[in-house]
Image 1 (cartoon, one colour):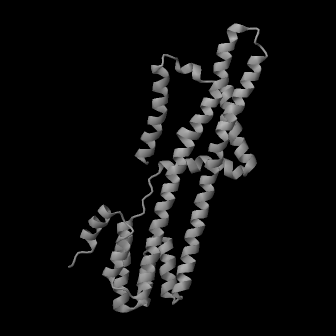
Image 2: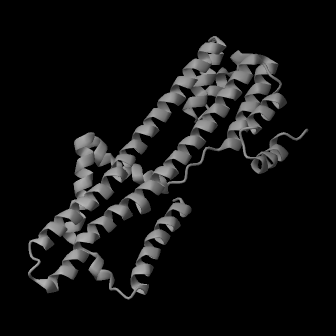
Image 3: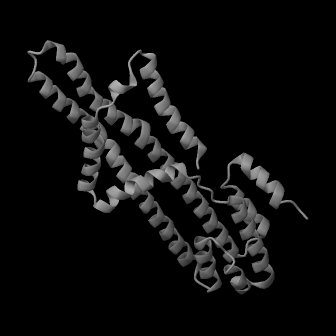
Length: 261
């Protein structure tokens, strides 16, 4: 569980509730079932209309990804690549054949398999770049579904407000009901804003950050594989890979795996 996401979402809605209570209004007046149906379910069905049943149904699984910790094991990747580089320089690229079965990273395994099979370096890079590009497209598609819902929710909030105002205007002779009816009409706008700005947009930003990190790690793996194929010195390879890490983290990893002896 990503604690930052959990604390963040609790904090956001907690501050909204605190603001409501501290303003002297009861929390119950901010709940309206018809407004919920118009904004949340109405905009969700519109997402389905614009995409597919599978995409609309899968949106909640996508949202859940923002609460999972994404770890890529950069230190382990660097260690493995350096060890393979040393072995390849001592015994040749074919000696890596036995090491491939122990790899739990399918992307690294695929790249090294191509290298061991004697595939041209340009082709290896092209194939791995294509895989990274396709991964980004899948991630972008998931974020796009969330972005669609975030764009639709405030519009449905305004739609619900207009519906409420029309009903209110039809009963203007009842002066006492104007204030309460206006409040109910505005609740849909509140719901649309909350869904878009307090929930969906932060989730999109988290998923984009995770995508950028995963792309960086895969680019690091590609650089390592190409360096092994080129026969680079393991320490040169290590320096290339450490460049992908933040300076503080790079120094810590360097102390552990780049030291002599």
